[in-house]
Length: 104
Image 1 (cartoon, rainbow, N blue to C red):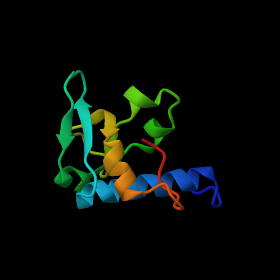
Image 2: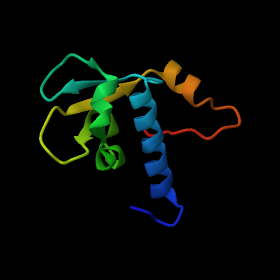
Image 3: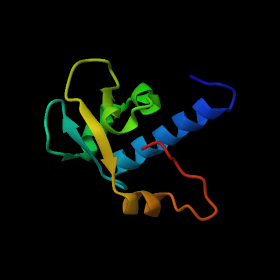
Image 4: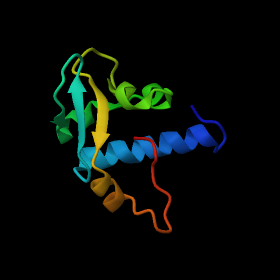
């Protein structure tokens, strides 16, 4: 997926940072199961076998299209329409003098 330090590499790095922060419990990500109308907190343990779907983040219809994917490509719970608290996000990646992920 590398593009020589360009845009895609920056997005991949940002997604990896968000994924690690969720797994470490520094941020909470909410999502909906397919067809569900209610958001639920995605627990830390989920992120050990799942990640953010890179292609769904690049989709121009971001909001409702962002989703998770399994790291081992097996079936399993998939969350979509992911959300992160802006307060948690800003606390983890302060905007003053620091570059932070802008993908979710």
